[in-house]
Structures are given as C-alpha cells and as structure tokens.
Length: 299
Image (tube, rainbow, N blue to C red; front, side):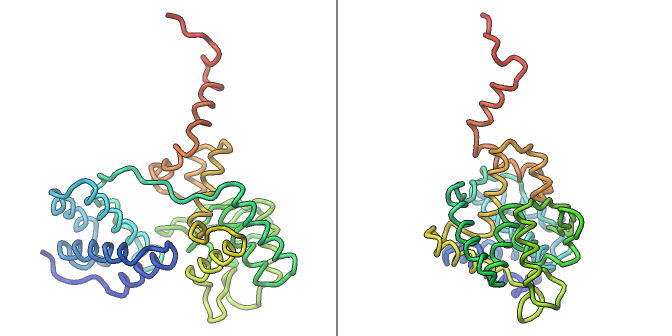
C-alpha cells in the first residue's frame, strides 16, 4: 500500500457538492466516502495520484463484482471531474480507471410542457424588471438554451461575452475552451441582465461577497422557481436543464457529433447516453431516409 492521505477538504467539498446540487442522500454520501477511502488505502493521496497510480486500482479491484467495480470507478471519475472543475488539479487522470461499467442510466428529464411552465413563470417575473428576476431568466435560458454546466454558468466571465457575435467562450473541464452558440431568446435575456447587473467584478453573475455566484445558490434558485411553478423541485436542477437541452436537440434532429461539441464532452461515448431517449424517431429516420426506403424486399 502507498502511504499518504487525500486532502480531506477536497473530499468534504466534493460530498457537499453532491448533497447540495444533486440531492444525494446521506446513505449515498456515506457509500461514496467509503469508496474514496478504500481507493486511498491502495494508492495514497487521491488529490496527488497520477494515472499510473489509478491504473493499479484495476488489479486491486479485480475480484469485485462488475457492479461494485463500476460504482467505485464512477465515484472516482466524478471526484476527479470535480477536482478539475474546482482547480484542485490541472488535469483529470480518470481515464486510467477501469472501464468496465454497466450502461449509464439517463438523468431525470423535464418534458417540453414542464419546460414551458418553468419558463412562463420566469418570464412573468422578469417583466417586473427586478434584477433578481432578470438574472434567473438568464440562468435558465443559458442552461436550457446553450447547455452550459453549472460551473461554466456561474463562473462565466464578462470577457467571454462578445458584443458582436452570438457565441460565448466557455472554459470547460480540464481547461478546454469551446464556443457555445447563444440563441436569440438567451441573448435577449442575457442583455437584459447585463443592463441590470451591479457594477464591478469580472463575472457575469457576481456574488455580493465577491467573486461569482456559487453553484449551490444557483441550485437553490432553480428549486425555488420549480416549487413556485408547481413542479416537483426534485426534478429541477442545472444538470437536468442541461440534459433537457441535449435530449430535446436530439429529438429535433441534431447530429450526435454536433451535440458532443456543444456539450463539451471529450468522449463521444459520454454523449451516446442520449441516443436511446428517442429510439422511435431514430428508427423512423432510417426508414424514411435510407436509400432503400420504400423498396419492398424480395425473397
């Protein structure tokens, strides 16, 4: 075994994020903490571990059932993604983890009708011109209209919002930059917020205490909006709006590679979780567009 321990502050922050943003239950958090601790016993400090160290986990976990192996690897992938997002690490070594895992379940999803109810209330609030209401409308327009991650949204810099182009320059996981198109609706909401935004700071969504608004606060604001709209607040979060963006684009005929670029996924396999959400449409597309469509098969 390798000595050393992971930075407890990083693990505590990771678990706090899961509780606040994803509504993870106490039992889930305890299980995640145990999985991180068991990995730490094998390779030492998780914060400092490199790909070689993580690769050793595959051998150490070789006797585990596939479902257990998948769960442990998933926890560590989430942990290293969080470390990269928060600046604890400059890289994400999680690609060295064992790859065996069951098919990822689809996230909770809002229907078109539920999205409409949510936006109707936010737009009604924004008519008042209250800065908080304008900010909230900008939030949901960018989450659902551009598919931003929660971290990308709250940390958006003023410099990333050009005046003469309908794109945002987003710095995503691992420091990778991408251009994200902003639709007309989102542009209008964003411009309205920028006019009402308090002066000072370099972020589009500043915090009264300095820096930018926290992800936890964003999560709370969306839950409150859902509750007032008569929706189950457990179904509404920044992640759910991002997933709705991806799913509804795919339903509308978006190409999977385009979707991968818009979402900032490094691996197309991550984007492929959306391919079976609209299986009927995809089958109909093949039947309608394939060169042999309409030709009867001969026997």
